Length: 232
Image (cartoon, rainbow, N blue to C red; front, side, top):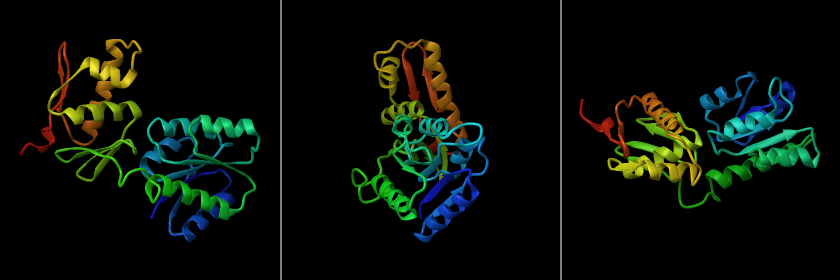
């Protein structure tokens, strides 16, 4: 069963979408707190998002960008705006598809299933989801999630890249130059910006109960120790 998050401020339409999604064996979850869409996304961890453009406070384009900062899950816009500029703007902000209202529910369901197959099912690249694992700590780069003992924390794109680099080499040293190249290519970045990202990764590890794992080797780089597997 897949979880479909419905961000639509028309209660009747949201309810009909939820019913149609349930008919095909999946779970539709309606969002009613339109000021806290990202927080609800983190709680629900949906496999796909149906997102309206016209929403209270912040529009769908804003929430699409926020979701994209931490996840690659499919996002389908559903909107009464049928102009080409609106559809282009949605795609440029990270959407995977755009459906204009009024629509046939069979089309919506077909597009949902198409995206689910593409990302999670028959059409997903490779034989399975790519993971990076070290002593029970598992990184899911496509989902941008880190998991330990069934507990999961969401990551941003840069946190995902940084953790993948550190996990792949753990417990070996990763030089500062290697990290800068992975995160910013040839762009100049000062030490404070790098330190901020390192501290964010430490915070994510602490959310899983991991403390003291990420070592700063002054003047050289960073080292990730698998301390989460040490006996108590």
